[in-house]
Length: 260
Image (cartoon, one colour):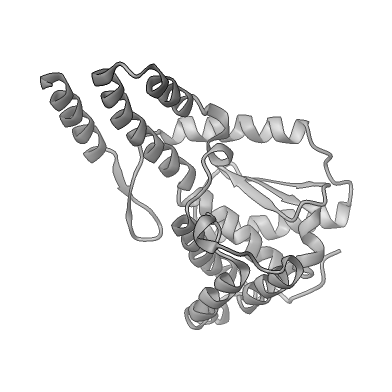
């Protein structure tokens, strides 16, 4: 039992030393170094792109890179940013640790214009800047530590095996450990500020999620999902528009145009 108390005390001390603040103005637990997360993100990005069909649409690719660079500059974080377009019908986009961004062509008909796509990319960039992947990994590590102590006490091989699997997620942190609904809402909020600061009309973020809801028919049992349903996201973003519009009006505005 003394060993258990010592383990818990040591873990607590380690966690206290690994608490930091993010751009959202809150503290977060981070047990994984930026260097490790960025290296894992880079490796995962290269692996995904090597197995994907990359878009050959020159104008679209150029527009995605242009939007991405503006959003990245607005974030103020000097990652080795990369922006790619994957030619798949999937309505999705992602940003891995270290600023590795990919947009799927399936989201283009839903976004329709550059400002709406900036909302999507602002959200994904915010996940990376706010280090949500590292935070989720750290949370799982803490849960793993607690379970391993219990496993050590009761000799539960299955528990120890489960924790070993959790600790070994490696490259796919952001994919294997989905973001919480809190993280999604936080990325929406900060991403909205990024797009507005970059000069894209933040009102298009609300329109985007209204279109997303109309296309997908919404989502039932929201509490069971890590993503809020489109209607909830549109409503939450609407409440944030006054501040975002002030930022937008002070920016060098980018004309809202149809995507190529």
